[in-house]
Amino acid sequence: MTEAKKDTPAPAPDAWTKWVALSTTLLAVCAAFATLKGGSFSTKTQLATVSASNKWAYYQAKSLKETARDTESTIIKVIEAGTPAPEAKAIARKAIDKADEEIKRYKGEKAEIMKDAVYLDAEAAYSQARGGNFGLAIMFLQIAIMLSAIAALMKKQSFWIVGLCAGAIGVGFLTYAWPLYEKFNPPPVAPVHAEAPKAAK
Image 1 (cartoon, rainbow, N blue to C red):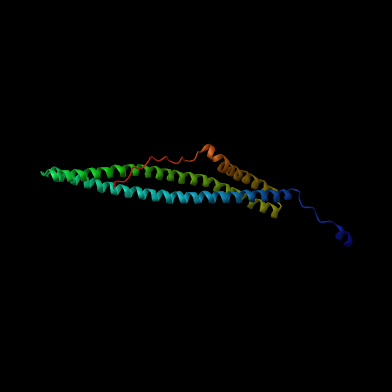
Image 2: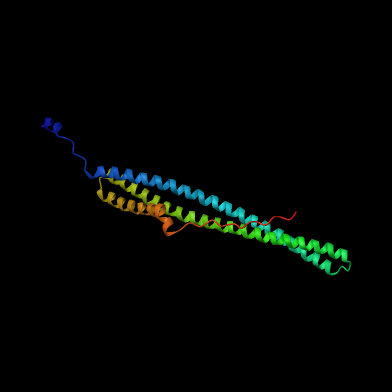
Protein backbone atom coordinates (compact mmCIF):
# COMPACT_ATOMS: atom_id res chain seq x y z
CA MET A 1 0.00 0.00 0.00
CA THR A 2 2.81 2.36 0.87
CA GLU A 3 4.60 1.72 -2.42
CA ALA A 4 1.37 2.30 -4.34
CA LYS A 5 0.93 5.69 -2.70
CA LYS A 6 4.49 6.68 -3.56
CA ASP A 7 4.01 5.77 -7.22
CA THR A 8 0.82 7.79 -7.56
CA PRO A 9 1.57 10.80 -9.84
CA ALA A 10 0.85 14.32 -8.64
CA PRO A 11 -2.41 15.79 -9.90
CA ALA A 12 -1.96 17.76 -13.12
CA PRO A 13 -2.58 21.50 -12.84
CA ASP A 14 -5.79 22.80 -14.32
CA ALA A 15 -5.36 23.74 -17.98
CA TRP A 16 -6.90 27.18 -17.45
CA THR A 17 -4.10 28.22 -15.08
CA LYS A 18 -1.71 28.31 -18.03
CA TRP A 19 -3.99 30.83 -19.68
CA VAL A 20 -4.02 32.82 -16.45
CA ALA A 21 -0.24 33.19 -16.67
CA LEU A 22 -0.41 34.22 -20.34
CA SER A 23 -3.25 36.70 -19.87
CA THR A 24 -1.58 38.22 -16.81
CA THR A 25 1.60 38.77 -18.81
CA LEU A 26 -0.31 40.50 -21.60
CA LEU A 27 -2.21 42.66 -19.10
CA ALA A 28 1.06 43.65 -17.43
CA VAL A 29 2.50 44.72 -20.81
CA CYS A 30 -0.60 46.82 -21.52
CA ALA A 31 -0.42 48.37 -18.04
CA ALA A 32 3.25 49.26 -18.52
CA PHE A 33 2.51 50.90 -21.87
CA ALA A 34 -0.44 52.82 -20.43
CA THR A 35 1.74 54.03 -17.55
CA LEU A 36 4.40 55.25 -19.97
CA LYS A 37 1.94 57.13 -22.18
CA GLY A 38 -0.02 58.49 -19.22
CA GLY A 39 3.17 59.86 -17.68
CA SER A 40 4.04 61.52 -20.98
CA PHE A 41 0.72 63.35 -21.12
CA SER A 42 1.01 64.29 -17.45
CA THR A 43 4.34 65.97 -18.24
CA LYS A 44 2.81 67.75 -21.24
CA THR A 45 -0.01 69.02 -19.04
CA GLN A 46 2.40 70.45 -16.48
CA LEU A 47 4.60 72.10 -19.11
CA ALA A 48 1.63 73.62 -20.93
CA THR A 49 0.13 74.90 -17.67
CA VAL A 50 3.39 76.59 -16.63
CA SER A 51 3.87 78.08 -20.11
CA ALA A 52 0.29 79.39 -20.13
CA SER A 53 0.81 81.02 -16.72
CA ASN A 54 3.97 82.70 -18.00
CA LYS A 55 2.13 83.98 -21.07
CA TRP A 56 -0.70 85.41 -18.99
CA ALA A 57 1.82 87.11 -16.70
CA TYR A 58 3.52 88.59 -19.79
CA TYR A 59 0.10 89.71 -21.04
CA GLN A 60 -0.55 91.43 -17.70
CA ALA A 61 2.81 93.21 -17.88
CA LYS A 62 1.95 94.55 -21.34
CA SER A 63 -1.43 95.68 -20.03
CA LEU A 64 0.24 97.67 -17.25
CA LYS A 65 2.58 99.33 -19.74
CA GLU A 66 -0.36 100.16 -22.01
CA THR A 67 -2.26 101.67 -19.10
CA ALA A 68 0.75 103.74 -18.08
CA ARG A 69 1.19 105.10 -21.62
CA ASP A 70 -2.53 105.81 -21.89
CA THR A 71 -2.44 107.77 -18.64
CA GLU A 72 0.64 109.62 -19.85
CA SER A 73 -1.09 110.49 -23.12
CA THR A 74 -4.17 111.79 -21.29
CA ILE A 75 -2.10 114.02 -18.99
CA ILE A 76 -0.13 115.47 -21.88
CA LYS A 77 -3.35 116.18 -23.80
CA VAL A 78 -4.63 118.17 -20.82
CA ILE A 79 -1.35 120.09 -20.67
CA GLU A 80 -1.50 120.70 -24.43
CA ALA A 81 -5.02 122.08 -24.19
CA GLY A 82 -3.97 124.60 -21.49
CA THR A 83 -0.72 125.71 -23.16
CA PRO A 84 -0.98 128.78 -25.41
CA ALA A 85 2.62 128.63 -26.67
CA PRO A 86 2.91 126.99 -30.13
CA GLU A 87 6.31 125.48 -29.33
CA ALA A 88 4.98 123.85 -26.17
CA LYS A 89 1.97 122.55 -28.08
CA ALA A 90 4.27 121.04 -30.71
CA ILE A 91 6.37 119.29 -28.08
CA ALA A 92 3.23 118.04 -26.34
CA ARG A 93 1.76 116.78 -29.62
CA LYS A 94 4.98 114.90 -30.41
CA ALA A 95 4.88 113.22 -26.98
CA ILE A 96 1.20 112.35 -27.44
CA ASP A 97 1.85 110.78 -30.85
CA LYS A 98 4.71 108.73 -29.43
CA ALA A 99 2.57 107.52 -26.51
CA ASP A 100 -0.33 106.65 -28.83
CA GLU A 101 2.03 104.73 -31.12
CA GLU A 102 3.31 102.71 -28.15
CA ILE A 103 -0.26 102.06 -26.99
CA LYS A 104 -1.11 100.71 -30.44
CA ARG A 105 1.99 98.49 -30.36
CA TYR A 106 1.11 97.14 -26.92
CA LYS A 107 -2.41 96.29 -28.08
CA GLY A 108 -1.00 94.29 -31.00
CA GLU A 109 1.51 92.50 -28.77
CA LYS A 110 -1.22 91.67 -26.24
CA ALA A 111 -3.39 90.15 -28.97
CA GLU A 112 -0.54 87.84 -30.04
CA ILE A 113 0.31 86.92 -26.46
CA MET A 114 -3.34 86.11 -25.76
CA LYS A 115 -3.41 83.74 -28.74
CA ASP A 116 -0.48 81.82 -27.28
CA ALA A 117 -1.93 81.79 -23.76
CA VAL A 118 -5.35 80.54 -24.90
CA TYR A 119 -3.70 77.86 -27.05
CA LEU A 120 -1.52 76.68 -24.14
CA ASP A 121 -4.56 76.54 -21.84
CA ALA A 122 -6.35 74.41 -24.43
CA GLU A 123 -3.27 72.21 -24.84
CA ALA A 124 -3.07 71.66 -21.08
CA ALA A 125 -6.77 70.75 -20.89
CA TYR A 126 -6.42 68.40 -23.88
CA SER A 127 -3.39 66.61 -22.43
CA GLN A 128 -5.06 66.31 -19.03
CA ALA A 129 -8.23 64.80 -20.52
CA ARG A 130 -6.30 62.37 -22.68
CA GLY A 131 -4.00 61.41 -19.83
CA GLY A 132 -7.06 60.73 -17.67
CA ASN A 133 -8.11 57.97 -20.05
CA PHE A 134 -4.69 56.36 -19.68
CA GLY A 135 -5.16 56.60 -15.92
CA LEU A 136 -8.46 54.73 -16.14
CA ALA A 137 -6.81 52.10 -18.33
CA ILE A 138 -4.07 51.62 -15.73
CA MET A 139 -6.62 51.27 -12.92
CA PHE A 140 -8.67 48.56 -14.65
CA LEU A 141 -5.56 46.70 -15.86
CA GLN A 142 -4.13 46.62 -12.34
CA ILE A 143 -7.44 45.31 -10.99
CA ALA A 144 -7.37 42.62 -13.67
CA ILE A 145 -3.81 41.61 -12.79
CA MET A 146 -4.70 41.44 -9.09
CA LEU A 147 -7.76 39.26 -9.72
CA SER A 148 -5.77 36.98 -12.01
CA ALA A 149 -3.15 36.51 -9.31
CA ILE A 150 -5.85 35.67 -6.76
CA ALA A 151 -7.40 33.20 -9.20
CA ALA A 152 -4.06 31.43 -9.67
CA LEU A 153 -3.39 31.23 -5.94
CA MET A 154 -6.87 30.14 -4.89
CA LYS A 155 -7.59 28.04 -7.99
CA LYS A 156 -10.81 29.99 -8.51
CA GLN A 157 -11.59 30.38 -12.18
CA SER A 158 -14.37 32.87 -11.45
CA PHE A 159 -11.81 35.44 -10.24
CA TRP A 160 -9.91 35.06 -13.49
CA ILE A 161 -13.06 35.61 -15.56
CA VAL A 162 -13.90 38.77 -13.63
CA GLY A 163 -10.28 39.84 -14.05
CA LEU A 164 -10.51 39.33 -17.81
CA CYS A 165 -13.61 41.53 -17.89
CA ALA A 166 -11.75 44.28 -16.00
CA GLY A 167 -8.78 43.81 -18.33
CA ALA A 168 -11.02 44.17 -21.38
CA ILE A 169 -12.32 47.49 -20.00
CA GLY A 170 -8.75 48.62 -19.37
CA VAL A 171 -7.67 47.68 -22.89
CA GLY A 172 -10.73 49.55 -24.18
CA PHE A 173 -9.66 52.74 -22.39
CA LEU A 174 -6.10 52.24 -23.64
CA THR A 175 -7.27 51.82 -27.22
CA TYR A 176 -9.45 54.92 -26.99
CA ALA A 177 -6.75 57.03 -25.33
CA TRP A 178 -3.96 56.08 -27.70
CA PRO A 179 -4.95 55.56 -31.38
CA LEU A 180 -8.58 56.74 -31.36
CA TYR A 181 -8.63 59.82 -29.11
CA GLU A 182 -7.36 62.26 -31.74
CA LYS A 183 -10.01 61.10 -34.22
CA PHE A 184 -12.85 61.90 -31.82
CA ASN A 185 -11.16 64.88 -30.09
CA PRO A 186 -8.79 66.78 -32.41
CA PRO A 187 -5.95 68.53 -30.56
CA PRO A 188 -5.90 72.34 -30.40
CA VAL A 189 -4.27 74.10 -33.35
CA ALA A 190 -1.30 76.38 -32.73
CA PRO A 191 -2.07 80.04 -33.47
CA VAL A 192 -0.72 81.87 -36.51
CA HIS A 193 1.08 85.07 -35.58
CA ALA A 194 0.94 88.28 -37.51
CA GLU A 195 4.15 90.20 -38.05
CA ALA A 196 4.80 92.19 -34.91
CA PRO A 197 5.13 95.98 -35.36
CA LYS A 198 8.59 97.36 -34.72
CA ALA A 199 9.14 99.16 -31.47
CA ALA A 200 9.58 102.90 -31.62
CA LYS A 201 13.14 104.05 -31.09
